[in-house]
Image (tube, rainbow, N blue to C red; front, top):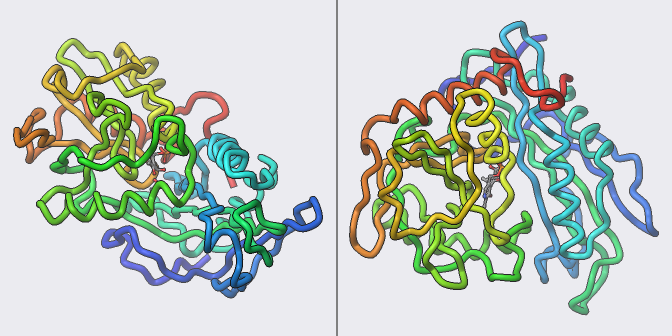
Length: 339
Ligand code: PLP
Ligand code: COI
C-alpha cells in the first residue's frame, strides 16, 4: 500500500482531511450500523443541542505502526468506557464498547495510507465524538444523536516534542467541585480557551489548574494530566473527581510501578509543596509525556531539573510508554488491539 505523500517528521497537531470518516446515527432508541463516508462534513439541525447547550462529548486515542508494519490501538476499551461515562453525565445514549472499537478500527483501515510509518514518531490520532442533534429548543436532551470517528496523522502536540515546557498556574477554573471536570465534554475545553491563551501570551506553553474549591492543590493542565517524581523515586499524580481520568496517567501508574520499580501514588499534591519534586510532567494522548521545566505560581518560578533538558526519570518513563505503544516493549495483557 502506497503511503500518502506527507513529511511525517514535520507533522504537528493539525486537522487535515483524509480518505474516510465514520458516521452513525441514533434515532428512536437505537444506533444504526454506521457508514464510512468520503465527505468530512455532516449536516445537523440548526437547533441541535450540541450547538446551543453543549450536549456533546469526545475522545482521543491513537493508532501506532510497529517495527514490523502492524498497526495497533492503545487501550481503546478505556476510551470507549470513558465516552460512555461522558454520555451518561450529559444524558446522551451510550455507544457500546464493541461499536466504538469497531468504528476506530474501520477508520484506521480505511485511512491506512495516512497512518504514519514506524520510526517517524508520528501516529494517527483518532477523534471519536457524540453530539446531540435534531429539532429541539428546550434545554433538555436531544431527540437524535450522531457518533462519528475521524483520524488525522499527527506529530507532537507541544512544539518540539519531548522537550521541557514552561507552565504557570491559572487563576481560572476549568471545572466545578461537582461539575463535569471528570468527563470529556466540550464545555470543559471552551472555558479553558481563555486561560490557555492568557498563559501563552505570558510566554507559557499552557496553564495548570488548581482544585476549584480551595486553589491549593494541583489538578491538571488544560489538555493533559499532571505528575511529579520525587528524589526518592515516588511517582505521584493527583487524585481528584474534577480531573479527567487520563488513560495515559493510568498507564503511567502501571509503567512506573511494574516496569520501573517506582512507588506509584495517586494523591493530593499541594501547590505549596511542589518543590518536593525532582521532575514533573504533563501526560495525555496528544501530549504523550511532556516534561515541565518550570511552574510559575504566585509570581515565583519553580524549576524542576532543567528548563532546557528532560530529566533521566521522566525520559525513562517516556521511553517505556512509547516502547509499549509502538510495540517495542511487551505491553500488559489487554492493552493492545491490533488492526
Ligand atoms: N486531561 C485533559 C483535560 C485532557 O483533555 C486529556 C486528553 O485527553 C487528558 C487529561 C489526558 O487524557 P488521556 O491520557 O486519556 O488522553
Ligand atoms: C487528547 O489528548 O486526546 C485530547 O483530547 C487533547 C485535545 C483536547 C487536544
